[in-house]
Image (tube, rainbow, N blue to C red; front, side, top):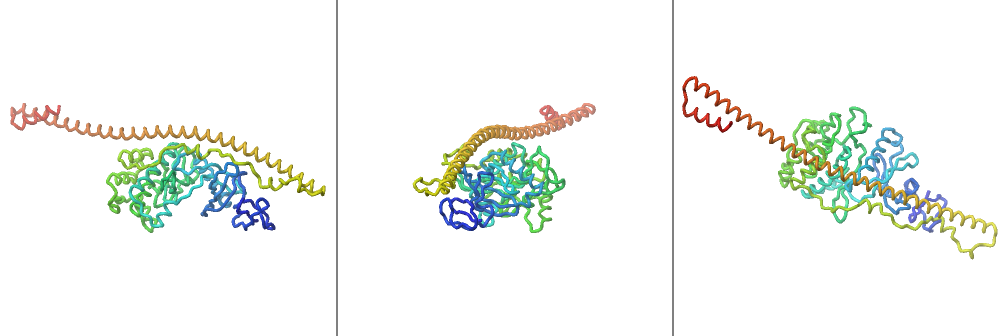
Length: 461
């Protein structure tokens, strides 16, 4: 099959020119390029290839929207567990709406291939930038950390744990004039706390240099698991190495399970003590000793003056889904729009042209109806996203308040413990004085030390 580089339509190998616009056809290198999938997404080019599938640039035929499509390999799509995990990834991403999380629009099937339709992003992952030798300054790291924490807080608000925070899943792109804007990728092994796990009991999933201790022990993941993994990534950006870096996997595992990480200041003197304290708390071995969720982490960053997020709020949903007036067209329609004076007198040819015009008219009507249906669907989708965004914002506000209350509660507990300790000390002083007074009365022996103790006892009482 051949493809037209101008309109991206596909034609038989026997043709040399596009029947629609007359452009010279090219050999199609990839079977999906030029194909229309899901009835409205035209594949334009391949962007990247991976072990589980390929990513393509595509365009919505009716909404004039450029998208990225992740097409899984057919062999993987045949695996029931993998297919369910992919369905869940799309469902989770469609549920979570945040500007720091890659947006998922749709999921379609194409010849036994599962295709996830998402926003088209231009940028580079942290993994790629680290490989290129980029050195990150502290303000940039704080910005990346703050934005990733914000993305995780949105996921945590609906009880979703990412479970695979690592440099290759954090993409840096450009947004409203701001460089290094974070987009969190790949919820493929995300774990919804209220859903049944798809992985077998005892299965370890994740990336060892960034995995929390509980996942090595095949324990249930928690929101604090994401906090640990994020700390490992930030440690890598600052120190140039992961907290427990080694060429031997057993040493990496032992480090996560047993060893204490070196303070980041050991490798990076320009890191503040406050940031070091926050990272070390995020790297605590026990989940209950870390920040409970991303909301507490964001609150800690803001309280310490380390929160960096320089983008003004905007209604991105409206802009993303804004309908644009696009002329309804079909390449074959113009092919049959021939002026009557050019018609040959031959009856058979005239009938063929007449049938062609009728077919073109039907195509126009079908295209118009499809466009009208898509517009109605997009209107419903906009309303759904608006309500979902309002709900997410409300949950986020409540979760933030909860994080503040947790901190105040922790301070209150510390004050109570301190007061109890002081109370116990005073009681002990009173008891000692009472005992000494009793002995003095019995022995009629009162000295200056006894008088001083009685004064202390009085003050304590």
